[in-house]
Image (tube, rainbow, N blue to C red):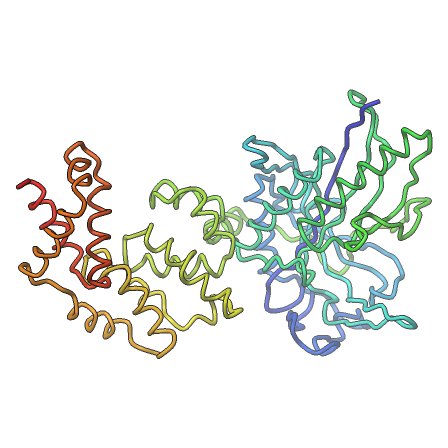
Length: 475
């Protein structure tokens, strides 16, 4: 018997705001435990929650990116339960009326377009962070009250690859909209996966298994693919699938049992009494959308259509938002977009990898890289000289403009000296002359390269190319 998987994802995204969702406590990841708290985060008697305006703006921006219907009234509910990670004894969330509903994303999966529908997006507050030790659990209340959006897909994802692409798409949206840093390893973006299987062609759902604590997109794919295989084997052996919560063990490369689920928890939802419904005007919603930073897909389209970069080059740049910001600053000062892409993704990235640095630590400014690129494109310096200048600027703290001036003064621009080198090169490479006259333009590149080798990159490339063509025409 063949089975098909039915997969739904719940993604929690911590928002980048100055303060928490319903209090003025600082929202910061890096502070010492239990230092970013106030009485409001614990719902002490006499305290009243206030709604974080920027968090609402952020939620609207993500809703728009996900093609959702945006509710013009903001309602909040209480989700009641007692657990050590919930200092209030309840969580303020949106159960009855989420701010966003009925959205979708389009994924690129193996060169095919796959549409995944999204059921809802709601705003809520985070719980505190638990650190489980052997004989105790430590609680860090800094995270309690941090603004969250929860994005719930419809159960129509088919496999681990689609799930991975879906999470990557959501992560790109929240990062490029400025809503979140999307760091799964730090818990800024967390994902719970629900997996069930059923006979192919059936419209009845199987028993749902939840997988929690997935900390990377690759682990999402691996965990789902393993779980589909595990459930299929159970059914083929005539065994029942239990409703349970599992986690992915990276060492074993399999999902392992955390706890068995029995009855659903009754959270006794009711409308949050301390926050009256808030009317969101059309102007407020439109402004939130209009002021949203350029999203990943918009940048990808601009890079490939306006800047004429290949999709591969554009995706390499966009894989890291800080690298993307650096690239944007380079192209403010040069229109040599391909050269800018090459310098960022090859030379600069190689240096960063070698020195275990991020682009934020890079010594050379984007404007200076643009100056270097312009010097290459205008043939003031050769590519070899540019790399030497680049290394000197990094290792000797040299000034790019001064290094370019000194290198351009060292270029061989004497026509007599160049003609001698050119004729020697042509005499040694008669086939290249034939190739060029037969329309093979790359022959010129080969010949220029040979001359550059002889001069250790000091021949003026523009003048060399011009004289070379003139000499070939004479033969």
